[in-house]
Length: 187
Image (cartoon, rainbow, N blue to C red; front, side, top):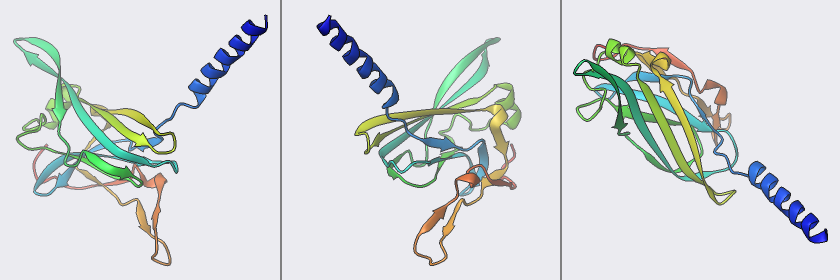
């Protein structure tokens, strides 16, 4: 009876600790993904920011496009890798705007706004980083459907210098702020 009681208590404690002490990435994503001007073309952008004091290091982001395509009269779901302008960061301490340049290497190249909407496009996001506080790898996922795309917009800054001009103030409530702009190419 003593052995069973101790064993049961140890198992219950381990299960509860494993459930509630599991590290989480604490990353917020912008509500929309934007088709914005970038260099001399257009890029698909979204923004993310950590909202805890835990530092993520060796952060890596991967994007995948899921879109319906008609081949031989049959609609199929296709998946395409979307290379990012910068896909790795040494640390994630502030906001990060991720940029997928729409050029010859992009699965969105030469697609119109109507093609993207009719194909019910969805961008899948996978973020992986090492949390120093828990000494463990954490993973975060997000997605943007065609309904969450904004064509012709750019993100507004979400930070400014403090009054003494000694540090940066980051406003998490401005994560989703953008303004409409003209795109250099027609979508």
